[in-house]
Length: 303
Image (cartoon, rainbow, N blue to C red; front, side, top):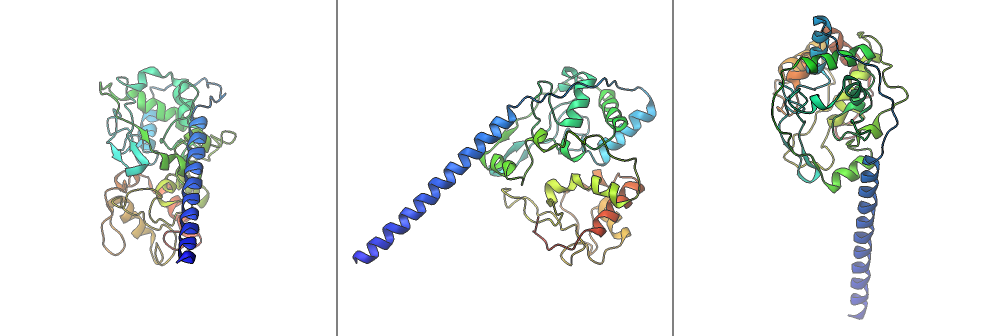
C-alpha cells in the first residue's frame, strides 16, 4: 500500500509540474505576443496617391476580389464596409473592419494605406491583427496603388466595426509560427514589393499560393487548423499526394476554383472562398496550378 501511495504521489507531482510548466509557457508566449503587438515599426510613409484611371481601378477590383480577398465576405465584405463575424472558438473572434470612406478609410491617407497593405503596419506604426498582409506584401507598387484606388472608389458606408478578440491559444500559435496573427512580424519588410509581373509560371504561382497557407498550412497539405474548433471544415490537401490532388488535371483544378466541385464530384464547404479565387484570370490559375503540381507529394495533415 505504501508503495502504491508513493507512486500515486509521484504521478500527481509530475502532472502538477507539467501543468505549471504549460501555464508558464502559455503566459510567456502570450506576453511575447502582446509585446510584439505594441512594437512601433520605423517604416517611412511612401509618396503614394490613388489613381482615378478606370483601368487602374479595374486592376484593383480584380486584385481585391480574386486573391487578396479584401472584398470577400470573410474579410471586409463585398461593399468594403465590414465582413461577417467569424467565431473561431478558443482562438477568438475575427471580423474585417469597415474600410470605406464611412469607416477606417477616412482615417488613412493614401500613403498610410499603402504602408498598411505593403507592410502590415497601421496608422500608429503598430502591427495589424489577422489581415494577411504577409501573403501579398510581394505585390509591386503599381498593384498596391491599384488596390488603394479601388478602395477609394467604393461608396462610403456608415457601419460600426465588429469585434476582434484574440484568445491565449491564438497568441501561442502565432508565436509558434502556426497561425500568423501578428501581421507585421511575419512580413519580410526588406524584400516587400519585389514580385514579378503576372506570368503563368511556378515562380508566380508560389507567390499566389501564400494566400492558401493560412488555411492549408505552410506545406499546403491541409488538415485541421491548429486550435480551431472541430466544427470548422478541414482544409484540403493541395499537394499531388493520393490524399490530395494526385491524378488531377488543370481542368479539374479550374472546376474546383470556379465551381467549388472536386474531381470526385463532391462540393467544397463554403468555408473555402472559391467564389473569390475562381475570379483569378487564366494566367493566375495556370501559375498556381503549375506551382501546386511541382510540390512534393505530402500526406494530408502534415501542414
